[in-house]
Length: 335
Image 1: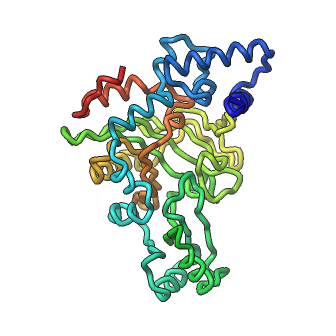
Image 2: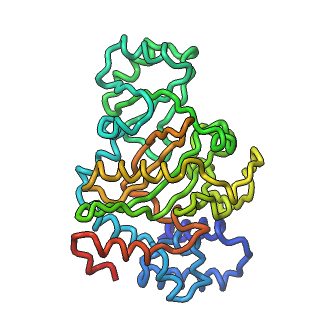
């Protein structure tokens, strides 16, 4: 219970700018409990979606923690199939035609192959195969690396496996938001294998900040909504601390109204990738738009965050229910 109170206070401080009396905080806590039982809203959901301003009809619009679990149960029921998304080495092998970059599995390569990789690239990314949210990714300058020592260290870490990847050259327009990281496009899809239809549910741009070398939302990154049809950013930029931005705070590049380059081609790229793993129907794809209109698939998230899709946009539960009702499984528990 102490953790619940602590978590409630943390989220309230992050999302609620207005100072509230102890009485109002108590009212909100009771209201959250009601929202939890009726709508399955987590504490983060309650404050992120401003449930304290919404009536029941408004709260029904949002994907909450419990509704997200329903999406998972319908679309991605088999854990073994989801490992294709979660293990970076398995993912790279399965989606080799979509990667747009060279890579090396450290657990199976020879020392000479390991050395050659560092000789070929000035910068190399070292990734833990089971890492997530940007954790476990290191950007290495090849000239600063003692290759023999690093190889021996990685080979002795039997509990963790690693891959090496070459750097990606990003489209200049997107790179100018935050040149210190790759700025990716997150597109969430639901695939209906019976009709071979890929539904594009949401799209977001993710930008790095504070000169971090990853754009992840949980590393002070900035997100913004992309209109699926036009590819234009149609929301303010925002971060996990509920700060909002018209322009990037570091580079000053305007976020709102920016046209994502090669947008139609990007959507087709993701639709093709979604058909490569038909048993995992719900996936958030992270894509880099490169120079000359080429694309690189970074990763596939079988449990793509529901809140990231809806912040500074709208509730998407109605759209998901409509799509999920067409999937050839039991969906009576979608109500």
